[in-house]
Image (cartoon, rainbow, N blue to C red; front, side, top):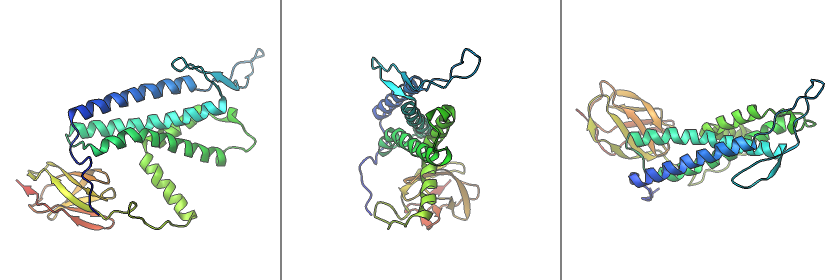
Length: 264
């Protein structure tokens, strides 16, 4: 399959600044929404007992004052927490790639869309938990907002792992879908950066289908992968490495780079 040249270049300073501003603005917005939509806690009755939480509450969002039922508030909290978890993942990955001067423009769209993926995954997991782990006679007042917010945030933070777990679980229950051209890409290496260096040099191998890579060989020496994505594998040149094309080890088999890496 021919690799698209769209977004293949490195991100420019302007791209990085715009992305940072958008991510910080989104983070601030999500925090405000989470705080405003948080369901009220149960009150204290005059006799010292606990009153049930209010069924509805009015929130203030930039001049908009909607009244949300407790059930609606829980939905908003779950989606917001899932998006915040995804933002944490995005910011961590973003500063790592920017700091190593390896951020490509094709990743920027993923960074901007990942919070929405985290929000939707958090909502899906919440629906699964509410449908299977709570009493059918229970209501929204029985749900601990701290617990579901924490779960949703972790789902957003580990959105890829959550998707893979859901796929593995339901893959055993449902019929396997036939593999399409956009589902399975044979592992392939298209570039090696840099072209050479001493032991300890951080090497980036670009390509497709590399997300499941487990190790990289430089001659007879094998190194541990420090970062793996579908289009990028990063590792360090191990002691004992020799000059030659690096070989990425994947479950589908070894993949040899088209270029030689020179060990100084």
